[in-house]
Length: 423
Image: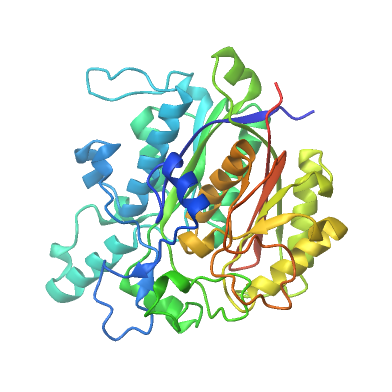
């Protein structure tokens, strides 16, 4: 029988909040984090909007010297991890070096982070210097700042975690798959504690330009950006790029109880499949995604009707939303019509690898606080998307278990299931 895995800490940096408490408030308010891009000059771009993390100062959570050696995606992850570690009560008092270390056995503590792209702003700046001034003017720390594994590595270094340090790269499913891999590390007994989630920071000219060329991003509502991300709406025209990080502290139930930790939720199931269909488009039948949900339910020992809330991938693209609706119907059958479903990307934009961690936190909050986050901007429902997507306003109700799905370029599918913790 699998070890029971529990959540004891949560932390996030997102376009709508820099803390879990503020995130809960923003979700209930239906607050949009989408606005005009401020991080670079968008002259010549069709896409001029994104869901940026505003007013972010990493020194609120990590030392300034450490932060200067990190790309933005690593800073997000480190800040979210600091919040989660603090809530979990796993940090020692500061030592001679001023660092706070994990209080559990460091050899049985690991980190698994999801990241899709790495430090794009570092890559951009170093290429600019290479082409304009030559190789001797490139940023000295280009490599250790840009590579995708550095978010996990920095968290390991900050807290003295000497167990596995992994990075999951499965596009938009990266954060979800990272959490699934962390679940398996604890169940196997390799780790007692794992810091896990996802992080992304790719609102830079190269990334926006590349996704613009794919015709994947919204362009119709650049003059009213807060209305641009509209999952399941008939008038949607693409996703809005977001950024941020969501991090959970996962522990075996036994370990958490031994140290008297406050348990927030049980992490009970993970399902993963591949479409084997197309490099960017999901399988339009929804079958592979539906099988992923079924695998997660089986892993959790739950039935479809046990799930009270489903956090949809819900990107606001023409292709994704109907395919995901079919995926949900395939997995849940008649219960699909009774279940509450929503996409918080209507508020946060699509935070790529960061989405899995941020949306897992939304599920846990929904269970703990008894509310269904809304899908804002759902004014004209697509007839092909005919389920209850909690349009525009928060709803309230008891939720015993919630699921979160992620779909990534390349046909990656991942689903997580959390449930109310019963001691």
